Image (cartoon, rainbow, N blue to C red; front, side, top):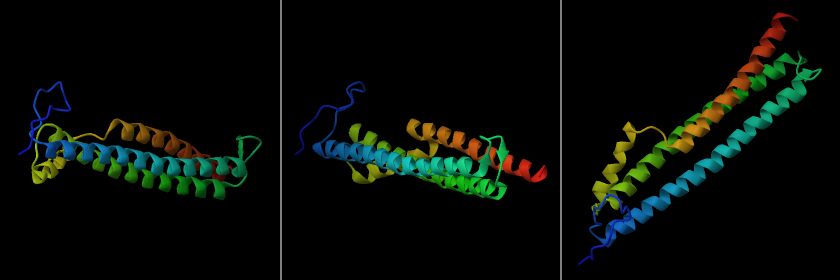
Length: 164
């Protein structure tokens, strides 16, 4: 009924059993790519907003460059808001990363010749033992840099309170 098709993964040598598995492979590969694009868009907006908060805190909260905190309440408040936004962004990245892993695991199962939709769907469960995709790990490191900057804002405002 279904013609034998060569595997999209030529190096593993396992033939695709049917056009159904090819279609499912294409679907899940495309879906995984769309998830990555969507995550990158959402996270770019969230990190951009974090950068705007950080810039506003530095511009409005300090005098004489960044040597003196002029408004410690503003600086500490924006520091806390920034950290909360980064925490939310971290949850977004982890959630998208889990979805991306599940989707690409399903694509791999279809690529390897599985044509049963239920077995392909179950292949997504392997994501729990995987680390996040590299793009997610890079974004989390970027969040760490921003978190350090917001912590520095909070520390500067606390020092300003103590020595005021």
